Amino acid sequence: MGVGVGTSNAVDGESALISAVRAGDTDLVRILLHEDSDPDLRDAAFCLAVRMHAGHIAQLLLQYGADPGQSRQEDLLPLSEAVDSGSPALFEALLDHEIRGRYPESELLKARDLARRWHETGVEAELRRRTGSRDAIAGTPVQDDEYNSVDEFTLGGMTVRDGHGAILTYVEELLGVRTSFEELMDRALAHAGQENHTTWSSVAILLAGRRDQATWTAAAALRTNPDPSRRLFGAEVLRLTHLFDDSDEDAFAGPALDMFTDWSAEETDLSVLTEVLVALGEHIDPRAEAALLRHAGHPDARVRRAVAQGFISDWRSSPPAFSGDARTALLRLMTDPDPVVRKTACHTVAAGRDNDPAFAEAMVAALDDTDRLVQLAAVYGLALRDDERCVEAARCLGPPQRGSLEEEGYLDAVWRYEWRRDRR
View (cartoon, rainbow, N blue to C red):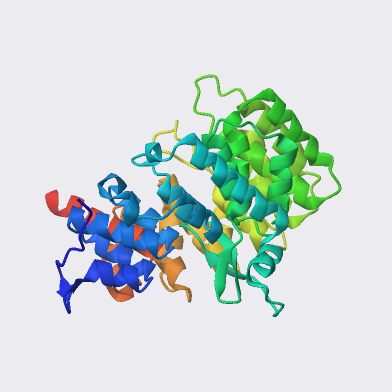
């Protein structure tokens, strides 16, 4: 029996959740799911999101417990239609582990071949072939899932996203196909300059997950490539290889630290340098800190943000503390001209749990910042320090903005502080 549409919290006979999915309102869907909903309603909402090609919402519903296994095959979409949409989020939602077994290998092979045709032909050329239209066409960036975007094209009444490279990569992995480093890199570089494009990120994550010497060597060789896009891709694969290595041996920690320490001293491209500094920030080592400190006064805000993000307090000390040089740099970055740098520095200080009174006073000063997120990061830091001043500051800032998980996280820390205070 198929999943029916629930009517709890109904408006005009339709539930608020179903209405939000139908409207494509991702933020409202998240709010309603956060407030909890009927499991049957979540399942029905998932089917609706899939039929609407709303992959981002379908993924969100899965995160909140929707069970696609409750759906009938006719409640969803053929894999070929999901491939044609060009939305990796939609395609992956249809291949959730609960229903992946519904698709025989033959259907996965057809999906792979269709994705390859779209990818190799190009969305614009394939759209023109299918529609016969010669009208002007341009891609518009759209969010495809929680973290990544794609470009969306409309021509002749047909709308398609350009995530076919990511779809191809995903289905090859399901089929056990080990695509070469070079071919995968070419897929990512088709979206050079769009490092949050799903194809770029999915390829980098897949290669990093291999955690083998051949992949490491191929990525490391890109460090000296004259093309900054290739250097950036290599840096990201190397960084994620170490980041994802949860083995006891952590074999790539030493090589990664050596590589990125030297690389940070010579890189001239700002995007690559930023990635290298983010990588250094994932190592607790004096060499990594020294490399970060050299760039604390860099003229580009992206670089300073990576520096502010990268300082890590020494969790082995009691209580945890930053080094003296890191503390000095962070206090300066908390008053940086760029609001994102200020917010990042505040967040790093908060997470570091360093009890230096200078940090508490710097966060109190940041409560008067002109940027709301800087103020919220300061409130968060004060709450983690059990500083009563966070309560009044949070009250003045008011509730989190609709759909902002970041604001919710900062303000939840105040609620947790009040709970601890009242228990005492």
